[in-house]
Length: 153
Image 1 (cartoon, rainbow, N blue to C red):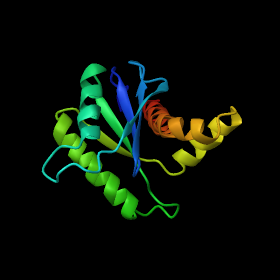
Image 2 (cartoon, helix red, strand yellow; image 1 turned 120 degrees about the horizontal axis):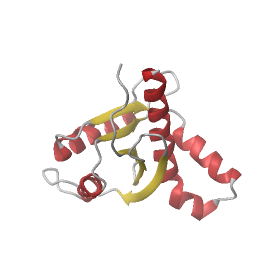
Image 3 (cartoon, rainbow, N blue to C red; image 1 turned 60 degrees about the horizontal axis):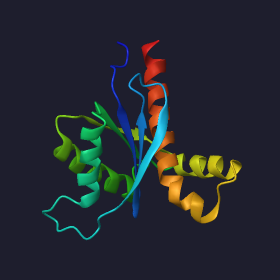
Image 4 (cartoon, rainbow, N blue to C red; image 1 turned 180 degrees about the vertical axis):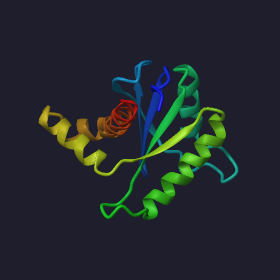
């Protein structure tokens, strides 16, 4: 397999209320927090939700070459209702940002790991809730980047 192509990638943690977004450097080495978007749950079924519009704007702004969306696989490795919901979200996003590809990656425990790391750094309570989605997006994207690098060795 060839080396990971150069370019910024965005990591996305889709929650019920918020969407955490992270970005990589152009070399695909390090993921960093970017922003947390509020989910637009009031959008009409035929309208593009505001959070997806905002994600599309981030794709353009950062000239992203790929989006990596965390798929919440349960501990048994199965796709439950949350995974079905995220897959539908990723499909909708892919339609809006085409031809930029959207990849799904196993995000098991990313929010738990992110919460633990934030707590270890003394970030708790309301401050943690404000950034845990971004931190989870960082975990998702960093794990994906690391896996891609291992594959190309």
